[in-house]
Image (cartoon, rainbow, N blue to C red):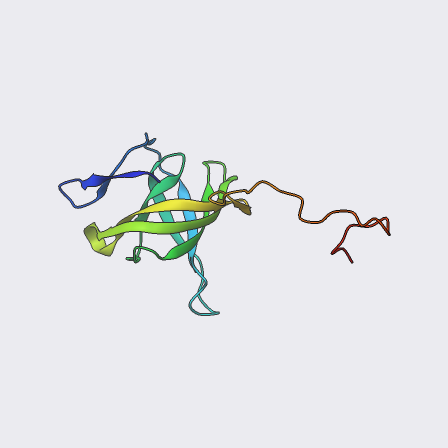
Length: 135
């Protein structure tokens, strides 16, 4: 999620990328889970962008905290199943909380990982047909 250094009057960081206002069901749990008996909670999206979600949660979460999330469409089909980091959170009406979360991994993929180019680190030995350092 890309944010500017400015904040809204409510203290929420302003987002630089466009977002779609959409309400979807989100199942989430803290990652890693705090207790073995901890069940998943239900939240709702308030908006979505390419890299994050605006959430309406039944509890307050801490910025930096990781959440295992599953976002479902109107038919119950999974749209996003991954890991998200809480960027901000503030109290809302009725004991609920609003939060912004950046998606880190989606469907088991590491979205934020930088891939390095490969280079040759071993050369063929003149005496054998295998690469040095191989087993």
